[in-house]
Amino acid sequence: MIGIDNPENPALQVKEGRGHKVFIGSTRAASDVIGTFWGSERSPALGLASVDVHIPPNHVKGNLEAPKQLPPDPTTEFAIVAPAVYASDAAFFAAVNRALAKLPTDKRNISVFIHGYNTSASEALPRMGQFVEDSNYKGVPVLFTWASAAQATKYVYDLNSALVARPLFGQFAALLSQTNAIGYDIFAHSMGCFLAMEGALTLALQVNFNPRGRLKTLVLASPDIDIDIDLFKSQLAQLNIDKSKIFVLVSSDDGALRLSRFLSGGVDRLGAADAEQVAALGVNVVDLSKIDDETSGSHSKFASSPEVVQLIGAGLNPIRGRCLAARR
Image (cartoon, rainbow, N blue to C red; front, side, top):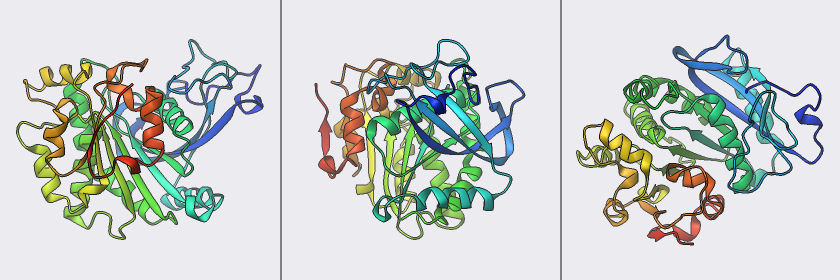
C-alpha cells in the first residue's frame, strides 16, 4: 500500500485527517511490485527513505483502520503516501535535521521503531503511524525495517535476517547519532527486540553505543529473546547501558510467543516470562497480562491497548524503577 494514493480522494486533501512523516532505514531489497516499496529479500546496503502516514479522521485510539482494498479510502483508512528515497547519507541526514528544526527545542527527539517477526514494510508503517498518533509522540519518528519474510512459516528466515541486519542497524544508529536530536528512544517489538539488543551490542563492541549519553529509553515490547539459556542476561552484561533506561513489556498470554517457543525448541521467550523474574535482572518491567481490551492479538498490546499506548506516550516515568502490573 506504500505510495498508492486514491486519485478520486487524495490523502493529503482530506482536511480532517492527520499525517506523520516517518523516516526509514531498511535492509530490504527494493521491490518491483506496485505498492510494496521493499520486499522480503535482503539487501547488502542500507536503504534510506521517508513516507507520510495518513491517519483517517475516523481513527479510534488503539485501532488500525487498514485498507480493505487498494487504493485506500483516506477518509476511513490509513494510507502511506509521498514516498521519497534518499540517494546518500548526507541527503537523509539533512532531511532529518530539517524535521527536527521544525520542532520546539525541547521536543527535538528521535524515536526509532524496530518491527518484529512476520511483518512487511507495508504492515509496519501504518502500525508505527498509529502508535505515533495514539501516543501523541512529538518528536521525529523513524522506522528500521529489516527483511522479514512476512510469513508465519519462515521463522528461521526471519531470525537469520535479523542477524544479517546487525551491522546495517549499527550503521543506521551511527547516522542518527550525528543528527541534531537532543535525545533518542528505541522501541522494538518481538524479534525486533533481538535485533535491537544484538545490533546495539555489535556497535558497542566495534566502536561505542550511546557515546554522547543521549539514549533516553530502550523499550522491548513482547521480546522474542531466549531467557532460559541466559541470552538476555549476557546481552545486558556486555552492553554498557544504565538498566533504568530499559523497559520490558511482558504478557503471560502472548500466543505469538508460545509459537516462537515451539519453533525455537521449547526455549522460553523473554516477553512471556514471569514479570518478577525479569525485574530481578535490574530492568523496568511492565506486566500486560491483565490487559484484555486489545483488538489485534495479545502480541501487539503495546499499540492496540489505549491504556498501554498512553502509558508509553507519557514516557513511562510513573513506572520507572519498578515492576508494574497494568490492569483494566
